[in-house]
Length: 371
Image (cartoon, rainbow, N blue to C red):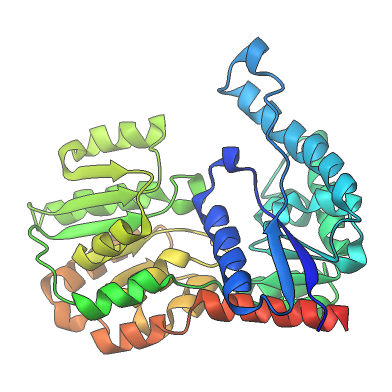
């Protein structure tokens, strides 16, 4: 059997998007461990060029200029150079789809995590952007539309793609993200850790759609009934506005924020949490929901279709942005743990997601493309 050379094109490491890095890394591991008889998979990514560092430093506008130049100049040039070196190409992140213009599209697939990148085109009234930004988004979209295969992590994302008529449904492949084995192992070996003070946990960035404002307000409200409550935020960096809200609500001493946490440490945070909060108003998948359930944690998430799909009946839901309802449900789950979905049901639901299954779906799709 011929082994096909498969190039995985991940995000620049300098972008510092842990979730995108994780997806790419787990796919590479899955292909190497489970499908090496069919595919010789390897990362293919150019060095990041610091175009503006000497003139403008590395922060603010200079950082964004560097990102755009590397995405739209460095990466496409690199792709053209390697276009004859591989049999197949896989873009790990749809927001890099402009690169597909420089690749043989009939041998290229792309993973579409969500449609946020195209908001200014699909709903310009709600997402007003300058002309240059819309032109950039249009080039990315047209690149994705050229791909032979477009993978998506949830049926919710697929329905959105079909709603706007972006991609021929025959080219869409459902490939749910996975949960690393560490989360399942930790749930089995240490199901009842000593948690000390009741703890709320939020995992993810602090970008606007994560609704950190709701998280802070819920913490402040819960504190009125449970003074010893604490919040751990992992993976983000509070903005100036969020820090001001924290100060105004008087909850500075109740919050611990950490970045760069390993997966093994993250499993312990999930297991130690009294309640995991996912306050987002929009998600492409919502990996913390799946990870938390696989760890046996209790999850309270925003009532949006994608999180309902990922968490099913194993999680509890509250309307986006409704602090009063969020607070009431959080207090109920903290004070009456029996009101949460059964732990066995949470663990069983989490088992739906594995990186092995994720890589197997992608491998089968590329095998069909070659045939």
